[in-house]
Length: 125
Image 1 (cartoon, rainbow, N blue to C red):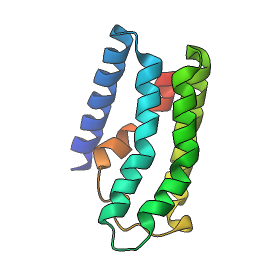
Image 2 (cartoon, helix red, strand yellow; image 1 turned 135 degrees about the vertical axis):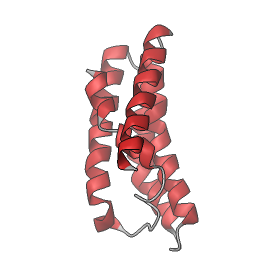
Image 3 (cartoon, rainbow, N blue to C red; image 1 turned 120 degrees about the horizontal axis):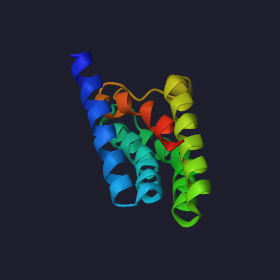
Image 4 (cartoon, rainbow, N blue to C red; image 1 turned 180 degrees about the vertical axis):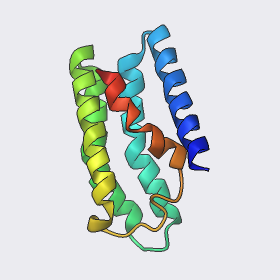
């Protein structure tokens, strides 16, 4: 099953990047993709069995929300640097997520999205 998820993630990433290149919306696409991260984690928290997880996910996601909003209004090059940096920071957060608090659903849902994430910072540059 993992190979199917990897292929789906890579194909989705390639299609979305090609679409954003064709429509000249790269900075908007990457900024909006960045803005989805905290929302996805809050969604995981909503369905988790632990109280207060949604609020904690929101607090941990505030820097990403701020970076995404800033990336929407700055020039293209700076937007790409901001987005790539925060995608990499998000990767570190993924690896250390369990150290902050337990959210039972992180890692069990949305695996296609998680598998395509390593490709996105590479595509920024």
